Each structure stands twice: as C-alpha cells, then as structure tokens.
Image (cartoon, rainbow, N blue to C red; front, top):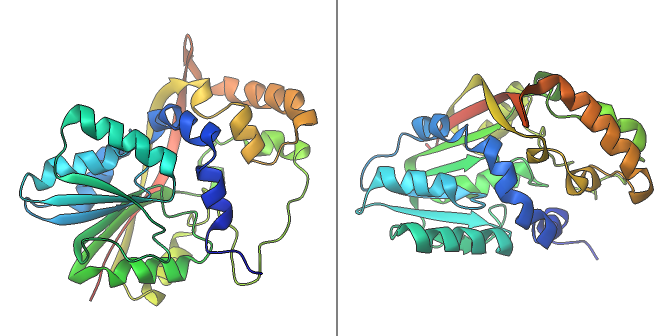
Length: 272
C-alpha cells in the first residue's frame, strides 16, 4: 500500500526530539523574517495563510502587519510545533492569529480563500511540490500573492556541514514512485523552481537572492538529532560529531557564538 502524502516528513516533524529542538533552530530562521515580511507586503485587513508555520514566529509578524481587522492562519503538519505556537499565542495575545494541523500539499485550508500565502523555509519538504503549490494557489483569491523563503544551493551555504560528514552516511533508499527527494535544498535551483511555480498555475514569478550573517551557538545547527536526521548511524555518531565540529570551527566569531553566512532565495508570485 502506498503511503499518504509526505508521510516521512509527517513522521519526522512529529518526533518529540525534533519539535522540542526547534526553538534552537529559530535562531537562524528569525534573521530572515523581516525580509520575508517585506516580500509578503501585508496590508491591514488582509487574510494570510502561513505554510509550515512551525512555532508561529513568522505568523505573529504577519498578524501585527494585518492588524485587528486582518487574520493569519498558520498551517503545519507537526502537532508538537503547533502546541508551541499555541503557547506563544497565549502569552502574546495575538487574537488575529490561529493555527491548524494540516498538510498544505493535500488539504483544504480553513478560512480560504486568502489574500496571500507565505512560508519561511516550510515549502522545501513536499514530496509532490507541483501538487502542493497548485493546492496552495487554489486557496488564494484571484490576484492573491505568494511569497516564500528557501535556501540557495548547498555550495552557497557553507555553514551546512554535509560534506564534512558524508563519509559517515550510508546510501538511503530511493523515493517512492511519484515522489521526489525532499530536503532543505530541494528548491535551490531558482530556474527550476520558477518553472515549477508556473506549472502550478502562478504568474509573475520572481525571485531575489539574499545573503546575511547570523550569530548563534553551535547547537543551533549541530547536535545528535541533526546528524541522525542526515542519516548518520549511531555507531558513527562520535566520528561524525567530531568532523562536523572541526568543520564549523571556521565560523567561530566570539566566545561560544558562530557567525553563520546564510544564503537564501525569496520567491514571489501571484495567482491569475
């Protein structure tokens, strides 16, 4: 029997270890939020859906921009991350922001259609990205906007230490028929991603390259969980950890902090 859409990602993001570690990862993604919000260009009173909303930080930023007469709905497949987002909502009083457990590739979003869809590194993990973007587009009003951030290629993101640990990772199984490999760099080819969005029905597809530096501790990107997610088996973990730490030492800037050079793309498009 074929698995349901995004089954591997659903399992991964509902692993308690992964969603519990997410606040550490946000120390990088938070640096991108202002640029993404500028690309979304929310207007007071608009209704926005945040795809892969995670812990809710980008949704809260959009909620402030659309004001009390607007609305933001955050969508994610991780129940654990949405609990975190709900706890944050309770503490900051964002009454115009709500969160829904759903798969943006296949599900109908509550409160659709929206004026805009946004995503901060949440759209690189669809196993059928053409279907996912078509589904997202179908839930925008005519003329509705799409804006999302995704990583530039691996070679532009030297902080991602894959090359340092490749020798410790055995080959993985091929994806199921009809599915594509997912991962942080799956949309890094700007030309291919532009064509993908056009095939999914979007128009006025544009992208802009961005680079910035973010200071954060080493465990923002490196811990046993991250190595395991990359495919390092338990028996090779100590070797892989040592190799990764040695590699990341080039980014050490001040005491316990590393300066991570981030290279990402922000895409914008519209629904005809």
